[in-house]
Structure formats: structure tokens, C-alpha cells
Length: 274
Image (cartoon, rainbow, N blue to C red; front, top):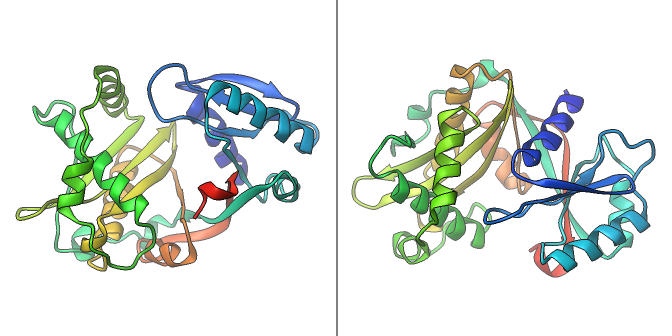
């Protein structure tokens, strides 16, 4: 299972990035607009990444104006944890979890707010994508699971106009099954939670699940995750996984039928992980 996840991690960025190799690491570089990628261990590496490899990648990331970001699965590349820390990076050790389909609940039993799957054919698709991103921006800038003050007003202030290329990329990937995006919406307050999934063949990762702080503790994150999982299963996805940002967040995913199988490591300069 971990080998399948490792191949997935390597395949996803190759869809929209070129690669540069530095010893046992590969750096994914996106040309043009879009979410910047990271460096990961090479699938064909015969030795673990060294401090020199990490240092070379960081220098190249700075040269390209990219975040100094690294991702890997600890159980696959255990030596990289100490190397990254010795390089002065802070490492988030996120619970890596996979879905047990037999324990996947009906989303309607988790929250009273309906969850809608985004459709590129919908005339409001561009607005939906912008709102999904705004919900995620507000949710992740106010991390954790506790309730807070940020709500619809902060979401609306975070909405930004998206360029045509970004919208076309989203629409194309949704249409061909590589991506699923959803919104949990209240008739009175609009979008309160959002999430997405990325799919390669029969493996998919659920990511970007976020809830506005003012709407937390209502089961929205669980309902969004369950909806995505049901959509992925209906599309024939055999292995569905995610990484939880903390043990508290992992408990939300336990409710949806996920179980922990390992640790996903995310390393960045110390000031960037809070």
C-alpha cells in the first residue's frame, strides 16, 4: 500500500510540472501560474537523500522563487527526517490515513449542511472555484478544529478573480476524473466548508478540506470528506488516502472511516510551519 502511495505522490505533480534531479531528490517545478510544488525522494534512488541533496534543492528553490518545501512518507524514507532537521527545516509529521470503505458513512448523517459537487458545465463554475479557494484560504490561515470568529465576511473578502488558465485547468481535470471539488453550503450563509480530491488511476488523495472557523464543530469537515470519498468510490477508486494536519484533525477523519497507516512528513523553513 505504501508503495502505491509513493507512486501516486510522484505522479501527481508530473501532470503539471517539469522535474530537476538533485541526488536522491527530485524537484517539481511548475511553469506558469498555479500552486507551487515541492521536492520528494526519487522513486529510483538507491540511497537516502543526503544533507548535500537537501541544501542543493533549497538553493535551487530560492533561485526559482519557489517555497523551500519537501514532502515524503516517513515509513518509505525514514532517514530523511533527521537530515531535514539538521538542515534547519521544521518537519510536520502528519498522520497518513487510508479509507476503510466498509466504515464510510452517509454524508447526510454527519452534518445538516448539504455538500455540492462542483460541475464545470454549471454557469456559476468560475464563482464556485473562487469561493472554494477563499474558504480554504480562511480555514487554513486559522488552523485547527476550534471555533473562531472568521466567517462569511472574511470568506467574501478573500475571494479573488481567477485567470482563465486556472479555471480551464480545474474544469479539464474535473471533466476527465483527475479532480473532484465540493462545497458545503448553507442557504443563509453560503459556502462554509470546502475540499477537493486528486486522482491518478485507482488511487486518490483527499486534500484541502477546510471549514470557516465560525462554522466549525458542525460536522462540515467530516461531511465534505465523506462526500469526496463517495464520489471517488463511485468513479472506481480503489485506494483513498489523506494526511491530517494534527492528531485533533485526524480524529475527524476517523469518524469518516479512515485509519492511520503511517506518517506524511512536510518540511519547510521553521518560520513557515505554525
